[in-house]
Image 1 (cartoon, rainbow, N blue to C red):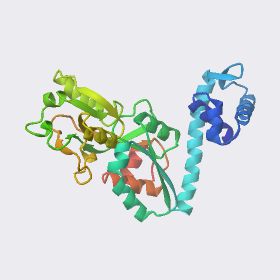
Image 2: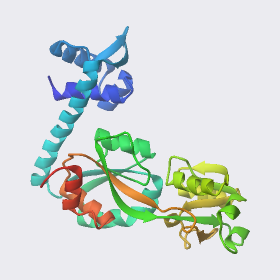
Image 3: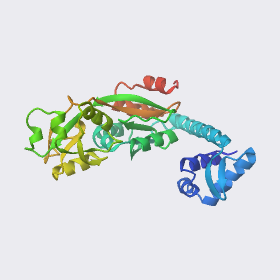
Image 4: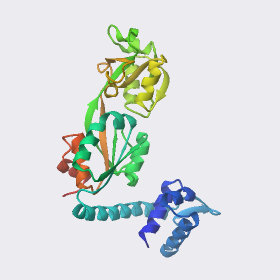
Length: 307
């Protein structure tokens, strides 16, 4: 049994049983992947995948267990490598952060800038995606940490650590009637609204507030990107509901904002990690830069490891 074979098995499973896609990710050939999986099955004397002709259609019962164990083995093998790097290359390495556009664009720039001053030789990667996508990246080990507002259910191996709370603002072109007088949910609901896609940036709490008042907001356009929302609001498509941190009066000269925090429950941004993950020292440093209360000892306690 080889680690390479276990990696092939888990990658195929993660790619929805598509051997061709797995081969691309593994930088090898489809026949090579199939051969290594067959060799492992022969050695174990059990089928890992259910087959229909040459096509994989599912995992067998033992295959499901093997995949779970293989995932753990591969993560621990990576941890061994990280331990060695921590002691031999303390200030070198890579840190991959999976996050949403709003966090990457508005919450992270100063943190990244400060981190780079302290660790100029660490390669940083920002992977942007939906909450489901970035949760999967952390669970699979493709990313070291995830930063998002939305909960990431369905991954028992992940731990979510609260970082900070935030709320929303209404944006509109200067002089728009919504910017005058008392802001209420009724007034917001009377205009076309441009806001975040349902899966992003606390949209559930926004909907909850309208529902509690028996209101149906007229959402005419949704996007995953705050800058896209602002663009269409400037074009007159409607008023915008965005994270307050996404509005900058100096940059967004074609827009004005009014705080709507009194109308909605605050949302909380979390850092998400794998349980039992070995983290490099600079990863702890990054997390504490982002949220000062997340000290190394607190994070280690949360993910179940000790120094």
